[in-house]
Image 1 (cartoon, helix red, strand yellow):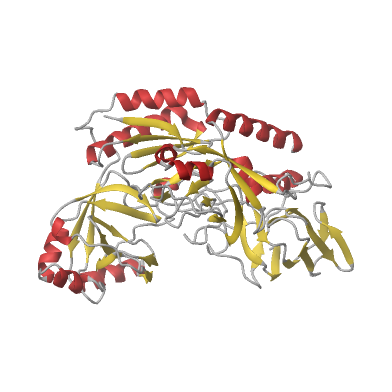
Image 2 (tube, one colour):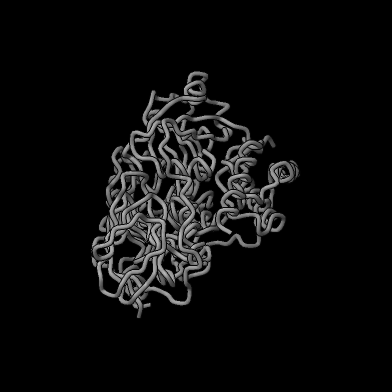
Length: 308
Length: 233
């Protein structure tokens, strides 16, 4: 069997594809790659489909060996890839040599990187997806974060058809990242002070950030709204807990919640937020649903043109 | 009935009723959910019924916002206040429960707190059918109502770090079974040996929104026998 063994499993490493759709009604979060564009870029390089998974790892730290000569690419947050004595910047197709350690080191920018391997990771599909949901113990390797020494099965049959990956648009140095959000129902009921605090209010990304959500720091937002009956949570939801510090809900969020929500940050800006390091300044900007639709349309077409 | 339809994120729509939750309202929401699956087919990624809400999630680029919103408003307008019929998929689920302090750390505490005997607590909890209003928190976790007013109890101030799978619990006027080991702040009054969630089953969750749930007290011997049988399978 073709395999890849993790010598150093790195930080918050999991197997992820484009996510597990259609099971939120049974309490299962969608999960999937945090930086979906980076996942798709890697899938594109190998001609992989949506279900073809990559190894997601945070802060660019990884070391592995493969059982056979095998091409791979690292996408997402930029890293330095070392094979033997050769060091190269990530984003290009490389070849791992049987039983020779490949190390990946961070370049100090972004959070999530993706290791895509020729043939793809052949971990089992569960409910139609290979994505790991660690809290629910579903998908990936025994539903958990990867550990040092884990051996992952690889598939066969796919080969790269390009040599270089399109540049990541999610990882960029920005003074201030705009988080455009579509206000939800409860926003109307927020106190005038809370609305003002959220309308072009400036916050910063805290270290309380993971696959479930990212907590922001700033002047507390006192919504004046009590907890509500549980309702479905959406991707990007701006949830305001009693302490007034907004949390942006992401891929591994609980499927329902009862905290007041200002609305939800659009997909395009969430993709940039997940690659932002603690301390990044962000600004919440309310937009209309029609503006959100237009941005979604433009962004998807931009990605399609890059990946075709 | 008063309702509103609006955005739920950039790829979703939410229908919210201002009624208090009731089985009839839930049946109505389930009926609209079924119709939405037909109406929007592949454009719909997922949909979730909450206590008084239905949220639809769409594929990027597949949402025609104005039309979908109009369609939802029409469906909501035609909904009746009472006597909406259950969907064909709604079922009655009977779950065996062992009510015993060895598996239920709060059972005796609750009896004492409410000036009831343990048998009274068991009778009041297992004496009526519950309605499944919403799912969430964990796969297979279902919010069931309504618990006898005599048993109403607040959540623990500090949730337990770990609650056993199968724990039958009460919080306010809701009851539920924890499908898997997890942290939890509800009061634990029993244990159910039947799995509530199984990846290999279809559907994966034993209880769905709209189902009726009955708890059937079993003896320690029956509970052990059921557990042993499940472990073998």
